[in-house]
Length: 233
Image (cartoon, rainbow, N blue to C red; front, side, top):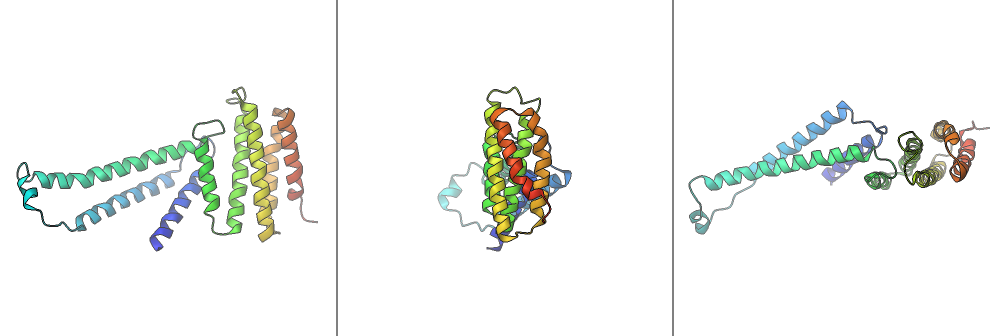
């Protein structure tokens, strides 16, 4: 039970760090070093378990089928190393994929994986405060994605307007859900006002790059968070 909890906390920690990477950013040196240490520890543990594993008596047919003296022992020794190499390669491939995933924006192939990882973080949160804060983090991520979609590298992409509108909608849904949850458990939390101000400063400059329904949707969002950003009366 203890090992399972520690594993879950470690996975959550990695997901959180990856999630907080800025768009186009990469993992920090400290994160790489810690990941390498954990992989090497896992490899060492696997070697120790393999060395401690009891080996049953060989049957006569098994002994007689050996191609030559020592050949079976060489095969037995080779298997743990091949298994460890495959495990490390898989872990490295997964981390490379994770870095690419957390730099993805709407419309990218890996973007659904990014959203699935965010949803996992929210569902695995232990209490309502943590869950609300993760939902607000998701809203911030959507604002950053809208800014990216409106930037020079994406503004002329096919279907970009639909992606902007959908991302704005997701941003508002995450905001309302997170604020509602946080107001229920911590109604006077200063994080609500701080979040609203940060979002206002992020979204407001985008209005001039929007038109039509997207601009109306963003304006409605700003009207909603403006009341949250105001100091309490």
